[in-house]
Amino acid sequence: MSKDFFGIVLGIVQDGGYPHVGSLNMKQQEYFQNAIIKEKITCLGIVDRIEKKSFLIDATPHLPYQLDKLLELSKNPLSGILITHTHWGHIGGLGWLSKEGLNHQDFKIFSSCDNISIIKKYCDIFEFNTNIFFEKITEGNLFHLTRNIKAKAVKVPHRAKGDTFGYVIATGDRKIGYFPDCDSLQKWKGDFLKILHEVDVFYLDGTFWNRKELDSRNINSVPHPLVENLIEDLKDLSVEMKRKLKFIHLNQTNPLLDKSSSEFKKLRENHFGVAEDGELTFL
Image 1 (cartoon, helix red, strand yellow):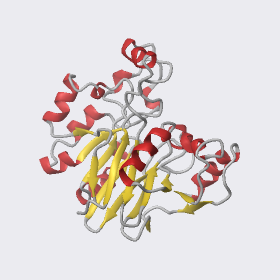
Image 2 (cartoon, rainbow, N blue to C red):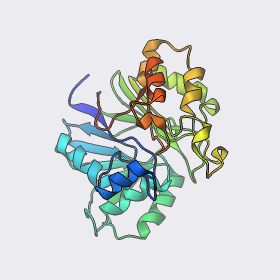
Image 3 (cartoon, one colour):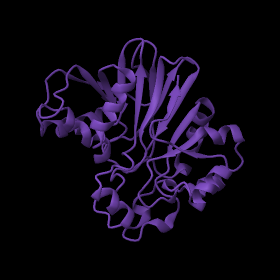
């Protein structure tokens, strides 16, 4: 483990943010009225201080704040962005890097061939420097972000156009699993358990606590894992394995956003956790 290489959580909530766009909830209205971003949209930063390079996993609409935090810790320019999938909350921040924004250049966007085709159409709407490079990655293949940090894309089931990836980020024996969006764990449980045993921390989609949270949509149309079910489904894991698992991408309705809730208490009593903005994992 080296303090020269690390991942940093830069956001923990679902694509609509928290306070959530259009929310009439009294507490969220208070955040809006006081111009407070209580929790930013799910994102992970990766830093190599030796090579002086920094990366983001996904470009969220909160990218200006997330990039500022990343640069504060790393003192390095943004070298690239790994895209998990093409839902708006995961690529919508790319506009901040256009000529009207940071006017950033000499960086890479990593994703699958299908995803890159979608992202290029998005970028065509805005003006970007021509020296932005797209690196096509394939499922299961290791690729280097730097000489010291490697990444592997793992395809997971999800309803997005194109592909949906989680990433395993590694240096030597230290690894981070980052899977912010997926369908029910039952569809890929074998791969999940294999990766959980390999990594030091596993950030997993915890959008909903249970099926009761959505009253305006059919929850079957947004088939994320349900944390309450996962606690039961994974009860036979060792305490060591459970403590690796931290939920991320929480919806505004998820009671885990409230650390005083009975649901949060139940989660902790069962040795699982919730990701926290700013937490570091050294690689």
